[in-house]
Image 1 (spheres, one colour):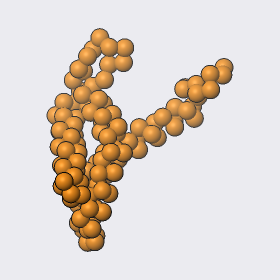
Image 2 (image 1 turned 180 degrees about the vertical axis):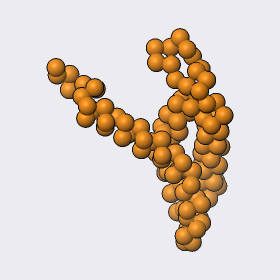
Image 3 (image 1 turned 120 degrees about the vertical axis):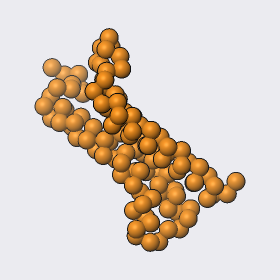
Image 4 (image 1 turned 90 degrees about the vertical axis):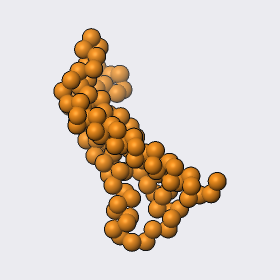
Length: 113
């Protein structure tokens, strides 16, 4: 298998995951999947967390796709990077929320009180 086949396969699998979890987040809305859990997540929150976790592999596959096909056009680069940007939004929001909690002192990192 050559470089283009591997890049295309990984990229298409990533796009399928982004489409599935993005559509599930929008359609699932406010239904709670497991109300007896310690922290019950709605479908929207759960799918956004999954999209945020998939940011690093998706952005890596986007750049692998750009390098495999040697895409030079600006519009084509933006089109290839759209799934990475879609997964980057929940990642950045989640990272900002964690930093916000650390700033408020609600999460004790060092174990000091």
